[in-house]
Every structure is written in C-alpha cells, then in structure tokens.
Image 1 (cartoon, rainbow, N blue to C red):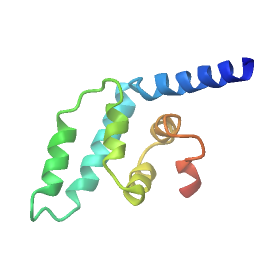
Image 2: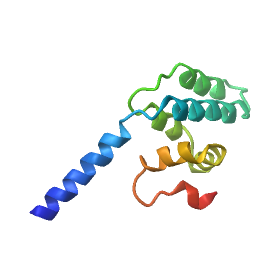
Image 3: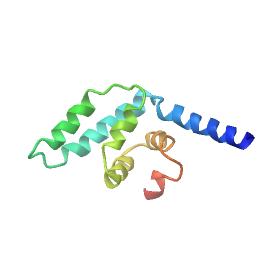
Length: 106
C-alpha cells in the first residue's frame, strides 16, 4: 500500500511538472526554433503556415512548450532538441515520459 501511494505521488509530481510553464527564456527559444524548422518545409498546401500560425500566437502558459514539441514527429523532435540550449533541452526532457532522453541522440 505504501509503495502504491509513493508511485501515485511520483506520477502526480510528473504531471504537475508537465503542466508547469517553463521560464520565458526557455519557452521563447523553443518557440523560435520550432518556427524556424517549420519555415524550412514546403508550404504548397499551407501546412507549414498553419503550424507556424498556431505556434506564433501561443503564450507561455501551462503545457504550451510541450504542445509545440508534440507538433513534430520523433525525427523533427530530435532536430528541434539539437538546436536548443542544454537548459531548454533539459526542460523538455524533464517533462517527457521516463526513458525518453533527447540528449542521448545529440
């Protein structure tokens, strides 16, 4: 029973962190670099523009940093992570499920 309670408390802490906004410096870096990646894609049908417009208007609240990160597939998540400072990459890693370590792909 005690182990179950500890497990639940750890899961709650992880969720609380996931929904906690990072510093403005981290958020703005993630936002800026994500937009740069989307700008590099073909926009024939407006797909990239749509993504950029959704990111551009986001404010640094709750899980918006992770929303931006989650807009990408795994390969572009790694591309984004490799463009970020160690502080920003770590802020994302701390919010990811355990075992998903971006720095190992650097």
